[in-house]
Image (cartoon, rainbow, N blue to C red; front, side, top):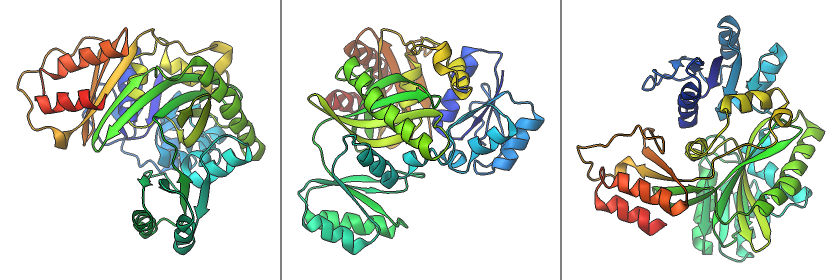
Length: 386
């Protein structure tokens, strides 16, 4: 199949590699100038917001299927234009995707649908936001509203620090902010795939972050099947139904950042697609043909051909190591051809993933591997964070 991936981020390149490995007959193009992985794909120098040129490329090169990982392409209406042309594309319509790019829209819809989310306020004036935090209990979370380029989300424990945080966000060309109550506990990430009519859970993740060091494990041992089904029925389907009332149905991936409190859950953020580095851990466990899953979803026949998305019985563990944190890298590097290891890097980080029959075994295998490459400081940080 001739496939175009509209995107230049790490997810686009990782997806291209995986689809090529999945079927070597796939002819893959990616809208990026990066040619470091050109043995997997052909780079196409088209800007992600140049939807007309992307359409022309698809038309004149007889591309059979397009997958948009680029938020810029999605919000600029790539799905809208492709549907008009009759091109197959895996991406939400621009209007439907607004729930994933505007915190204020997401919060209002969650509130309207009576879906648990922390108490929040939305402000377009700095003085009103500061007045609000004078009367609130700390800690609080302060976030930017429009998250297309980056999400700013910061926890503050005092009024003075929160006031400075508000001022900084408004100074960074943000015209609206969201302030919400802080809920204690670990963050979890859940991903679902939907053709606008039906939805299927993909994977749950536990992410632990400290400064520039992050680990991710999946499936999350603390997210039960019952909680996932409850979130599917009581959050995902109501969201999809509400979106369809006002615009075109939502087609693509929906990610949720959640807090679990006993039998309850709170939705903190909504994403379009996998957050950076989460795709790698998902594909390390996937047992089905990913291209077929995405193609069936784009053609509104997801559950006709997939009752669920099959993943292995293994667990996966990833560590994201900032290149700035690497003080010593050994000359020797062991063979990386073993299937349980996935290694990819972007400009700032190197991402390593291993799988095993338990989370602990996956982590042990990865640490054993990393000990042959990096000094003890990196290894100690991984162990401390987990």
